[in-house]
Image (cartoon, rainbow, N blue to C red):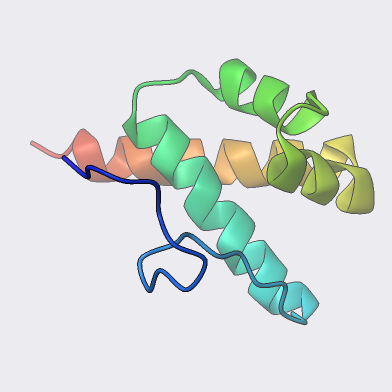
Length: 89
């Protein structure tokens, strides 16, 4: 356990950086986010709620940019793909 507060130049400080991304990059990233939530056991409708909720900045920004139908297709495709991979005999 650390004894002191983190210093200003702490190399382990969490830093977020915005990067320019193409639509393909954003779709890949969104797909990874959706798959992660599905793997955690959330139902597709629960994943959609995360995208609709403005409290979740990244997912909501994707939802606002691409719309409900785009996100729903992404969730449905990821869910079908995940079920196909986990339901093999």
